[in-house]
Image 1: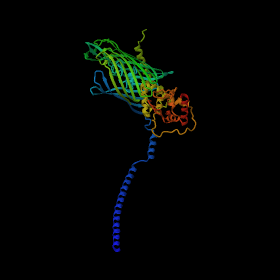
Image 2: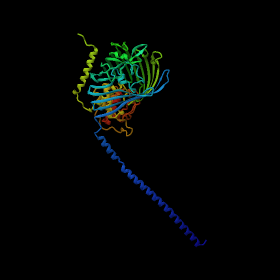
Image 3: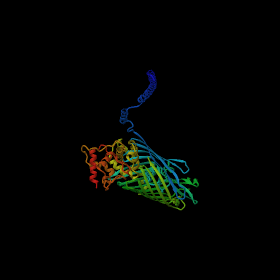
Image 4: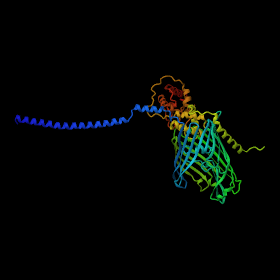
Length: 413
Length: 201
């Protein structure tokens, strides 16, 4: 190869390289331009977003304004909802076990300063047939008269004893069931409609609390059994009318001589009339007259460190009929008592419970003696898992004689 | 002369009390919201609430929720107005939850305490820990127990008081500084010294 040919070849190579480099450079520039345009677009979007956001300083400024705002920090009217609910499983002797929804009981509070409060509790239950039942457990207007006295007017939980008025909510009751005789058809009255004065006052170092009331009182029902009419039960469920025009008067006095111990005594007296007949001739009711109705009760509560012992006794007596055309001429007595011990295991969330109840009804088939043992796990202080076993002793082949295993989850809010 | 029977007496008594109760508010002044005494409130809270149910931690509800709850309980438990105000003041002062971050560290204890450890314990700690240090509520540690809570180092205990502490099995957490945010580090140190001297083995 001569020098001239070599020089031509080198020149051609250089030109080729130059053109190819230019082509590559052109592609890169286009690439960069594209990326720059894309970044510009993103930046515009970010600027737009920034316009719609606030700085941390601005947030703090708003927070300060809110915290220093006086409105609604202490309004005259307060609205609050509390209540409880429970679900569970019940296995009754010689029957198939069932899951069940117990109760959903929302409590509504509407308060006007420290002058008055409207309280209402609904009781929603799912029955065995799947239907939902709704009841008004209580509805009262509480008028805070002074430091020692509140007027409670409306439908209120009976102040006789402690279980019905304070212990029956499932997140409070230490066992999954109520003691026999303290349920809705037992010896202890459930609720009443009328006026009540409640409060507390110190007497030296002794603290006391009280409740006195005037109310419509209960109604009675009879049942045709074995060819004869008998008083079937006292329906002390807070009636909106007074069928016999005779009022019931009652009171409870609680004494707390030392912290942790309370003793309560209660009584009620009035008249009650038979207003319903089951499986019989309802025309007999026309001659029914008001009968004597008397209740007495006593209760105690003793807290010693992690151990709690409580007990309660209630007796309801209905007199004989004095009128004519009676549906059940004889009087009757319902009596029940229970005592319950609870022990919280040290430094744990476990709790052991034992309760003994003796319920005496005018009907032998409903008499019941019961031992109930339980273990509770306090998931939180208002959410409790309860496992209990009832050893029931009643008339053979009746529900009162069947043992039950119960599991319950109860939540208070 | 025939004496009236017990039913008549009860009936007249109830009517008289209802009527006198309704006219009595004119003899009292309403003052709302009136501040109560937190220490007395802690005592009343620990003595009354557990009469019926498990203790609810103050941190469960906001200030306004505690107002309606306490007034509801005033009716239920037969509390006096003063007891209610004391309990409300205690609950509203103790309902801040434990911090999950930003814990205060006991780097140094500067200054002098303006109250004695005994006085602070008597006002702030006694409601839950008790006069004897054994605890008045389920789950509250027993200071007198050998190898118990006081076997921890001063630094650990100081930190627990400063930031609050949740004891295992206790229904409520101890709030930071026992709920009294006005306590200085020197006063926290002072009350810790008192607790060690009085209840330590």
